[in-house]
Image 1 (tube, rainbow, N blue to C red):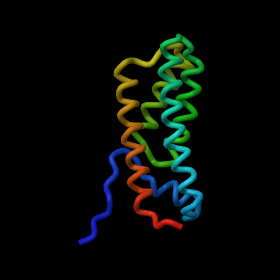
Image 2 (cartoon, rainbow, N blue to C red):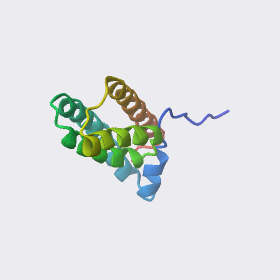
Image 3 (cartoon, rainbow, N blue to C red):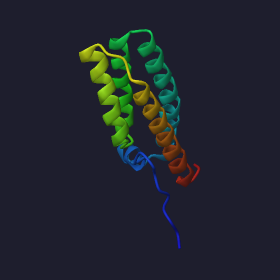
Image 4 (tube, rainbow, N blue to C red):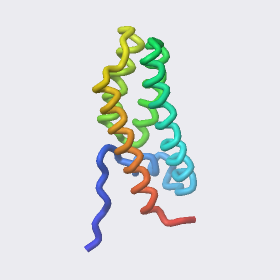
Length: 122
């Protein structure tokens, strides 16, 4: 019996659908997603620690859009809270938020990598 892979945090097929099933474009965007999430997480941590909350909120906003393209709903909700804290309240991320953000980003990356493995090379 063939079992479809399960995903912990996202629905990567949404991104494939958004590019009309073009596997090459999907691969490129998936790699960009993986790279960008590492960089943006680091920026959010750095900006929060430096008291640059507006910029932290802007980074969260950008990452939220990226997470939405792969259907990472819990990640989007968390990023929305971080965005609101930074842009509207002038507050940093909490340690718990940063920990959960790191966890969800890892799950989303794993989901993307798992999905990539199901796409035939070409």
